[in-house]
Structures are given as C-alpha cells and as structure tokens.
Image (cartoon, rainbow over all chains, first blue to last red; front, side):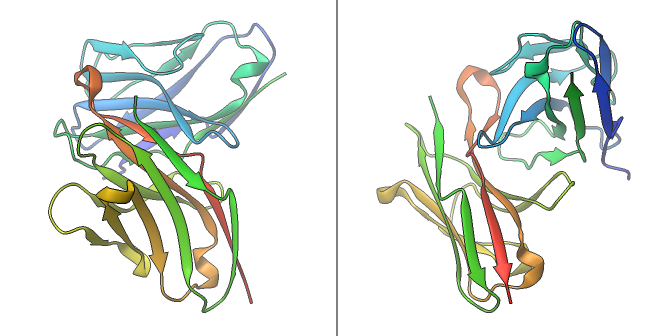
Amino acid sequence: NAGVTQTPKFQVLKTGQSMTLQCAQDMNHEYMSWYRQDPGMGLRLIHYSVGAGITDQGEVPNGYNVSRSTTEDFPLRLLSAAPSQTSVYFCASRTDRNQETQYFGPGTRLLVL
Amino acid sequence: AQSVTQLGSHVSVSEGALVLLRCNYSSSVPPYLFWYVQYPNQGLQLLLKYTTGATLVKGINGFEAEFKKSETSFHLTKPSAHMSDAAEYFCAVSDLSGGYNKLIFGAGTRLAVHP
C-alpha cells in the first residue's frame, strides 16, 4: 500500500491564482481530512469528509473548497490564493471508528506571493 | 471546546539524557490522546495513543506516555535520548463534538539532541 499520497510536494502561487492540492489513499478509509500547519500553531483542520459525497467544514475553512467523488480521492481547492494561505498542508485518512489512528500524507508546502 | 497545551516550544537534551515533553489537555469527557512525531520535511507519524485501559502507554522508538486524569496531562518520556530523536512532537486530543472525531493539536515541541 502507498498509504496517503499528496501532490505536489511544493508549489509557488501568485496572489489570486487558483490551484488544487491532490490527496489520495489506498487503504479504503472512509474518513479523510485536510489540515494546515503553521509555526507555533500546530495543525488546524480545514475540511473533512466522512465518505464519498459527504464533506464538512473544520476549524479554518475560509478560502478552501473540497469535494469527495470517490473513497480514494479528496482534493483541496484554493479558488483565489492569498498570502495568508502560505502554509504546509497535510491530508489524513482513517477508518470510521473513533479511536482509530489517522494516517498522514507527506505534505504540500505552499508559498503564496 | 477541547484544547491542548504543550509546555515549551523547544527542548534541548544531551544524548543519553531523559526526554520529557509536556502535554496538558482540557476535555469535559474522557479523551483519546495521541503523540505524533514529525521528522524534517516529512508528514506526521503516530508515536503512541491512549484510548482506554492502562494509563501507561508504550509507543515506538522507546517512547512512553502516562495518562493522568487528575492532572489532565499526557507527558511523553524516553529514558535515554538518541540523536535520531531530534524532531518536532505534537500532542493531540480527539474532539468528538459534532459527531466527527477531529484531532485538536498542540502547537508542537521541537526536540534537539546534542552530543
């Protein structure tokens, strides 16, 4: 199993540009999440999904959209990038049992100029 | 709302010395607690977790943590630090409010190990 994969590893955007961060998992996990990591703030939940076709907002959803058309994929879209979205983005997945471990992808480092 | 406080954003120890990384949480219900480690330019890897049962939890790489309900703490320890332990460590608590098991992370503690 590849686990959780994310592309790209690094991206530079100009303010106002759009892009999609890709996330895929091959563990047949129902639950997937997107987090952003900023210095001194740990990881904060952006959006999550409890299954194909079902998504919801997390702690810091503004400026981001998600969709979940398949169990495997959970892309994160930035419609109009802002410098405040400069961060490292992590995708995670787990089974639907509450105490189960979340598995994290390697991250996407995004710089918005 | 749940919250996690990690005392000390940077901790430095000598190789072979005790590692102690502190984590306190706020929770109105019995929590699930986690420690994750992040090596440079990598994702997060689970070190250990507490769900129910024994309060002393052993994890990978010789780390362990003890859940102390009376102190609302879940400190991470390792008896003897190794150079390879240098990384950032995150404590997290499960937040089940809203019907979804979200992880609430602390700000992280960067561990440096010097010879």
